[in-house]
Amino acid sequence: MRAYPIPWDERGPMTEVLERKLKALKMWADPIKYFYVVPVHNPTGRVMSMERRKHLMELATDFDFQVIEDDIYGFFTYDSPPELSLKSMDKEGRVFYISSFSKIISPGLRIGFIAYEGREIEKLASIKGEINHQVSTLDQLIVGEMLGRGIVDSIIENSRLLYKKKRNITVDSIEEYFPSTTGCTYPEGGFFALCRGEGLNSSSLAVEAMRRGVRILPGEKFFFSAESGKNSFRLSFSYPTEEELVEGIKVLGSLLKEVK
Image (cartoon, rainbow, N blue to C red):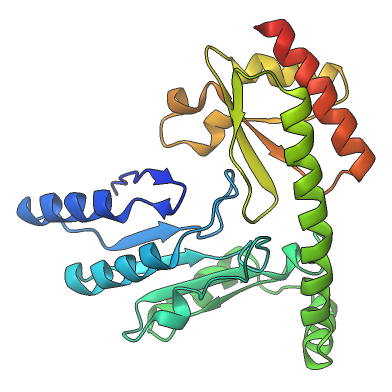
């Protein structure tokens, strides 16, 4: 199996780059079968624009491939209502829609779901059975009851307000405490921001940050080529309290000034 990376910008995966790649692969008689996308992106927090979503679905039709839409953070956008999912735009049964209640209700509630109309869903169910025969019956009953009572919708709305406030605190604190040589993405959705610094070694930075009580994730874990993300790191604002966010970013800012 071969995989090909497609770059992102502020509007999501660059579908014009994807189109050129698809044309080249078609000429080589090596068409792709699946395109995997996280519309509310981890680790950048960027949200795939509606223009790019439409273009991707057009390409899926023109080049006959399926889309795996990993929409685990899709319920959490902060500056505008959530965009229509790719699945909701799917008229040909091309989109596997994947999400999870663990990001909505509770991290310990390990219940995900897939929406798809094709026969491949039977194969996926069979593979799931080989890996893990059954998800907790109690957890499934809890989720079913919460869905039936409309509690999940209320949780999503309240959580969106909470995370938006934390996002704003994160952005403001980065602006106040980080050196100008370190730039971070603006999280339009999700729980993360990706930061980069010229000449930065994020693995070494993560070790020293941990010594000072702050945890970050080295950026190379998120890149097709580890070398590409060596000078970047991910910040998460979902779990810490508001006070911890400010203090943690302040500590990181001091550390970043030292390493420069």
